[in-house]
Image 1 (cartoon, helix red, strand yellow):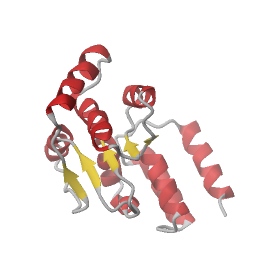
Image 2: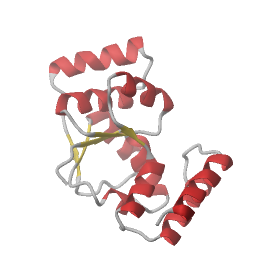
Image 3: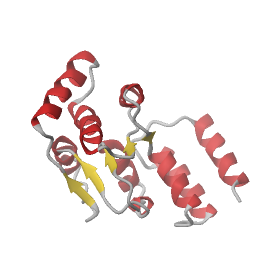
Image 4: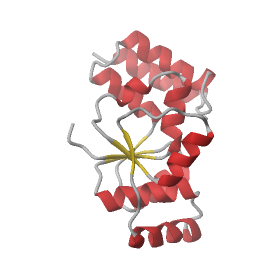
Length: 162
């Protein structure tokens, strides 16, 4: 549980939309930057107590400008990647494709909402049946863009899971 985790807005919103913030159970603290906090408040997302807002130091605020200007990232994603690097975190949660690409460029370990549902299954936080339900709900009840083909692949993987 000592892993440092930084999230941007997407995974927290998507897990909230399917009433599955329990997927975050295996992480003791999840750090978010100020902009992500603002975006979550705007979306009326209630933050679990394990989510902590952390301010960026000045040099990382400058890095945010680089990410937004040179890589065209939204402010929330740029702040989250900068916070990950500032805090020397272990995991970065995002569903944003551009943020994933930029994060990987900086050797950031990236995981999305689907990965969080699968981790909850692997760590026995939920059983197969609930994991399957939540994956299906990601397509029907959340704002996450996910293709039918990908859903089928994920459900097959869950089915094979021991």
